[in-house]
Structure formats: structure tokens, C-alpha cells
Amino acid sequence: MLGSLPLLALVVIAYNIIVFLTGATMETALVPISLVSGTIWTLTVGDTLLVLGLLLLFLELVNSTRTGAPTIINHALSLLVMLVALVQFIVLPQFGTSIFFLLVLLCILDVIAGFTVTITSARRDFSVSDN
Image (cartoon, rainbow, N blue to C red; front, side, top):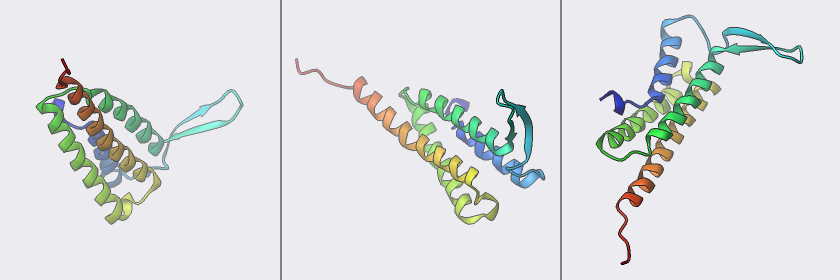
């Protein structure tokens, strides 16, 4: 069943934990990094969540090339995660940020790309030759 868990749910859950259980905001600095140019780049909580979301989106796209019942369950749960995140973005003031909007966008891309890749893969698996 864990193979069916949408990975982007982890990022949405992490955002919820940060917003509701800690005093941190998305602008909370985590690590200052000194660049070769001499500029100090400060990695924030929001930056970290976006990077994690992009990495998990990549893994979701790789997983969507499979066919079978667990993949269909994963797509359905991804759709549910996207709907929950979208409602949170629209309704709850703590989630009306650019960071969360981009996370919702990642969830939407996961749903669209997941269904598209799975349908394309399944079409190849079940194609019938002309001969």
C-alpha cells in the first residue's frame, strides 16, 4: 500500500506541520550559503519545500510509467492530494502564499502528467499489430 502513496503528499503534509505545529514561516532562514561571487544566499523553509517537491515530482513521473492497480490507486490518491491542497490554498489564509501555490501547481502537474504517461504506456502495452 505504501507504493500507492503519492510522494507529493509528503510535501503538503510537511507544509501543514510547519504551518500548524511550529512557529516557522516559509521565509524562516535555514542555512546561509556563501557563493563564489561573494553573495550570501539564504536557503529558506519555502525553498527547501519547493526543492523537495520538485525531486518528488520527478520520482512520481518515473513511477507513473508502470501499469497496474497500484499505479491507478496512486493516481487517484494524487488527485485527492491535489484537491485537498487546492482547497487549502483557496480557503485557509495560512496557505495563501506563493510557495504553497507552487506546491499546488506541482500537484496539478503530477496528476496531469501521471495520467498522461500511464495512458500512453498502457496504450503501447495493449496495442494490436495490423498483421
